[in-house]
Image (tube, rainbow, N blue to C red; front, side, top):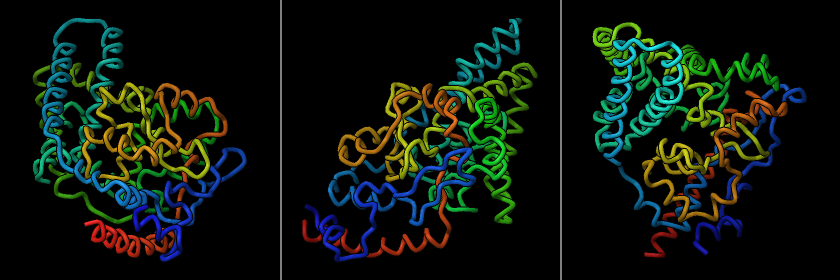
Length: 372
């Protein structure tokens, strides 16, 4: 047994009771019974599970790096969607035909754009942070609103402050929790306005922190205005309308958008992050491997299945999903699940839980030296 794991079981260091899987002891919040999110009194689980996995499988670090194929996918994805915008803008087809294609094809390409932006925001495409930002802008071409650079800002905060009250921009707002609860119709409407919620939560977070837009966010705005203007010139307003429809579909009630619910809405007690292991990971570049991604943010999409295979004793014992269609169906129809089905922690509890990490790191590095 690796020294790091021995120390956790023998009491040589402060013990995190969640070790080694890092599942909590809290009970999930039930709409109609509970009024708030579930509350945890520890830090988020992923950084500690990362050290637990590395102590058992140091070879995981070989998966760190970038994958330039993401750039090629981003270029092809943008070209395909702009090509469809041109088709619907210049060719006389019925509105129904455009709606069908906007949902099944445009929504899929739009959801893929979100995955590409996600890879770029973690600098997993190219080695330079600057060029990863450029990849984010390329992926933003077929999204008629400036998303890439704001997403980068708030998504990285989500990783740093997962579940921390007032700090994690991914947590639903108070009105989402109190108004919707477990009502199926309200949950359906809530999913349909999810594209708006991403913008609103970002604006609320910006107000809370009293921050101005960053230089790159302003660049993103200017870039999107220019790309939208070019699309209108090339494909007309109808072509731009097709991109808006694709954005709406791809970020709302679409299989490719179900990962927004899959990732952190609590379907079980004690577990706040869930992975999806299904066939749609193929077109959507393994975005479903969410526990793996949170544990190891330096591993690109192409390495996440290998991570799971190496560390199966950690991931296969956690609850996970196998169908995005069922994720949406269960979330909508099950009255005990709703926007309040999340877990939160205070900043104080998060920081206190992190104090153990210093000792864990020391033990981890000590174990490496002994193994060397």
